[in-house]
Length: 152
Image (cartoon, rainbow, N blue to C red; front, top):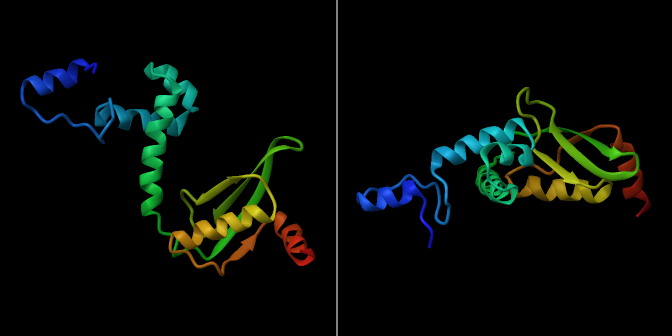
């Protein structure tokens, strides 16, 4: 097993190194800095800046996002706005759901695709995070989605 200099130094001195999680090759401070960069720039650009491959950075991101999602409480969400957008017309849609009552960090959910399945995915996500599934949906796709639901 290859050891980095801080790991071998800490082990040689009998010290407990501040590793953030089992299996991580990085110190807690490094992972904090990496997450700060990812909030401000694309993962690939951040990986190049800190000189690691993007796959390793994605592992860090998935770990911390997963931990935060486990703690997410959406019990106060009452009105949700939704919108669909595409990178190119007709290709690769994403649907975003916004908490209309929050002024800061209002995005509780985003999902690839569009249509009825995205609303069902959001409803399941909301239920899994203490949310009330009887909420108000606001947005341009809502009418079309309701028409689709009536026709099925």
